[in-house]
Image 1 (cartoon, rainbow, N blue to C red):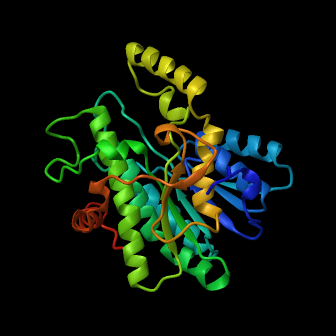
Image 2 (image 1 turned 90 degrees about the vertical axis):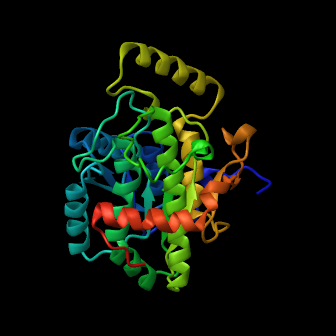
Length: 316
């Protein structure tokens, strides 16, 4: 696109149900708020109930009369994912947009999910893989009842360009590097989005799989958490620099909103800001994809591994 893309360009979302993981703060929160103001019902899928309730109160105050609800979902627990999906499907209601947004970034020491997976791979990749697979019936329901095609939006990162899928050590048990594991997880997210697109199109599904990245946004990924004092100071400084020179989390939500709503988005697309080094910018468009993310053979292998690790079979 030649012109800046803004919140005002979001088409009406009246009647749509949009599920956003990690919507209690940052990009997920701002995406939910913008979609609610356009008429969507937002489902805030959050791990922490108190923070989720606080976010829900802020959203209701910022968008009076709009619709939002809180759902407890811990992507670091496959049992939590299954429980959430069972409850959601029991409601027999469509999901028009699923935004796989929540993420963990570079904890300084290796941590594990409830199922024993490295935290970043287990949360960013396996949790969203299982969630998407289990919610496919609700997405298909939306496909049958709406003129607009349902969308699955997976949030990747420009960090994927330095990523490598280490099939011999996906869980970083042999060696753990915070950023290496993060880059691997974001590369895996993008490969998942592309492979899901291939499978959906092969099945002649009306559901779309696309991906987006926020550039470099000053989100909660850079704040707080289980970190040393030195790491905390470094991250606080980095957060200040990002807040000064790069994207706010409000601006970081624009690529997500573009991928979720724009009529210019196509099957298997990957979108982000078009500014300097793709780090920021009000113009949205196709993002650069690293060669390893286009490796269909490795994507198929990764898909099979995800099915084996989650014990969830995917049926597009």
